[in-house]
Image: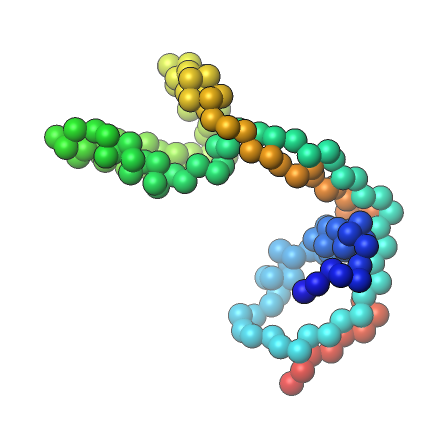
Length: 155
């Protein structure tokens, strides 16, 4: 879909407003699996206020491919150490998946784990090239009003 005839600020407001102004989770719960074709809607969208933050940069931790990185690390182990390394990977990944939401804090409270995380950040993550990040676009749900004027679904 092209935004050619829409001012970029309005295109951004439309996409953000639809995300914030409608409850997608509830709508998904009420929609049966299937293919829905020919949906036509006429909406009125009103956005009282939209904020666009400046662009920044960040450490690329989310951009690091987990499986490829783990495989490279395994490759650098001596062949006789790889089985034990795989056991440890399985153990720590299972532990991480089983953690409750506050599990990271509990893990860091474990003896030595917080210090090792700090060492990893200082000696590895800090040396990686930073990646650009577009500034966040925020619209408070109470600043969005979506009114459905008409809708139809092809048979």
